[in-house]
Image (cartoon, rainbow over all chains, first blue to last red; front, top):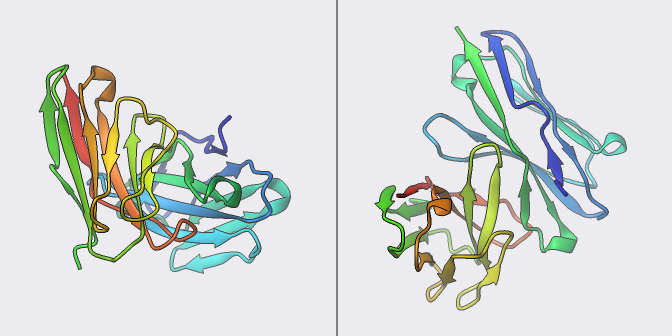
Amino acid sequence: AQKVTQAQTEISVVEKEDVTLDCVYETRDTTYYLFWYKQPPSGELVFLIRRNSFDEQNEISGRYSWNFQKSTSSFNFTITASQVVDSAVYFCALSEASDDYKLSFGAGTTVTVRA
Amino acid sequence: NAGVTQTPKFRVLKTGQSMTLLCAQDMNHEYMYWYRQDPGMGLRLIHYSVGEGTTAKGEVPDGYNVSRLKKQNFLLGLESAAPSQTSVYFCASSWEGVDTQYFGPGTRLTVL
């Protein structure tokens, strides 16, 4: 069964629009971590954020913000005032204590920001 | 620091050929991982290592072997390549299993 679901396959926006990427996870563990990675067209994987299951505080980093809601098992990612450089594939991932903290990735969401 | 490096960046093989992908990290990380990335499927774990001399199977280990003879290196081997192994391969490393994994630039492998 898929542990991480990113229902949006592709999102296309015009520059300066906000875009929200959904991530829903499934786990029975009480201790787990959630991650977001960015994969730009150049292909490398860039770490964006790591959040543990005991910290539901939302986080903001520049134009990026993350909303963690345990009640709905979601860890959504918003890019505010998008820019062309935000065009990339974004992956959400889960690591669980019961699985030796191995990463389970979602299928990814491709974001295209048009000028 | 170079971080995580992978060799080679690209490779084309014929069915049945063998090859080894090299991953090196200079962060003194204990844990190292090999993933494959296929369209629409995210990344899937092939094998991983929790320290020098150790290896363990991940989600999709069949057709691959690994070795971790030195702490900084993690080798991924394909003994008899198949077209189904056409993929982009990523190596990653972390201090411990619970820590953030940092990825190499990837190797694009095509098996004809």
